[in-house]
Length: 336
Ligand SMILES: NC(=O)c1ccc[n+]([C@@H]2O[C@H](COP(=O)([O-])OP(=O)(O)OC[C@H]3O[C@@H](n4cnc5c(N)ncnc54)[C@H](OP(=O)(O)O)[C@@H]3O)[C@@H](O)[C@H]2O)c1
Image 1 (cartoon, helix red, strand yellow):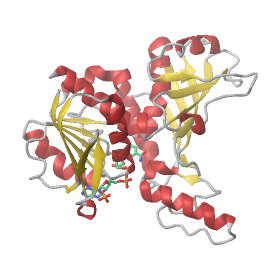
Image 2 (cartoon, rainbow, N blue to C red):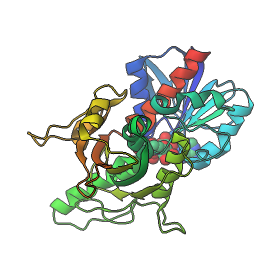
Image 3 (cartoon, rainbow, N blue to C red):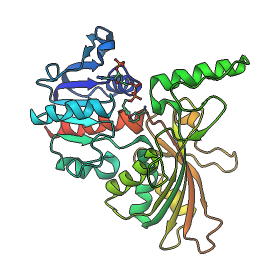
């Protein structure tokens, strides 16, 4: 039982998805508080047949909270999460604020649930792109030992929040009406275009999103030197990220072995129909919990059989954020 759950960022896309999943999974919770910026204070949201008024986030409003899920950006997490942790509550943080902090477990429950017990009041939810990648790669790594990962992503607009989704809609309409596609949220037009992920390029030439995938993957797998090369791309898809993944192994591995693994890997669904050319697509991943895994084939450039290619699509608002957070909250509730 969770005594007092606070959802910080309740009015955002991740917060709203979290509330939807709360209705669906209906975990035992005594009291729910909804918090956001002062802009949303007074907004009423129905949660489990009860109307709750959104309040402006403050230390006062967080007093007595036993579990808080933060989806309001890194600066809000940095300001308020330590206050809750110091008061004996637990924070599950969707932002990047604490992910690489050695004292903060970074958790995908299907992969490293054991790390939850090491928390000191803050547990970090990984970046959505990392979660999608590892839902496919971690079971393969456990079974066959992955030597190197190369991944290219196809990331939906909703990964950047509500305003980015609105921008995709508006630009699409404008483009079809023959008008200019004006970029305000993203750095470039997103409708009928794609571009390198909108996070800043860092000193090593990779952008922030790409470096997050590398660092977080290593932390979650407990493989601090795992070689990973990442290219992150934003595409004009409203919802659900996709990734093209190439894996290198120490020993030969067959597509049949990989397919057999996904017949029973929790949180994933095998979609791999060569005859119908039916493979993971965002349109099928949108709104569901499972990460779709398919397009499994032997790497043609590796006649020694030590390479596998695959493709995944997953709803980054669900498994990539809200669902993963609620799974962590549920395991805390069960432990209490
Ligand atoms: N979108 C994804 O797929 C995804 C996936 C994984 C992680 N995340 C992370 O989740 C967080 C939220 O992302 P989102 O996509 O849901 O963004 P969003 O749709 O833009 O929502 C942002 C939320 O944060 C609130 N907020 C903004 N400034 C605040 C402040 N100063 N104090 C309190 N609340 C504030 C907003 O409240 P108002 O409505 O009042 O402005 C809103 O509820 C980010 O840290 C993001 O990196 C997102």
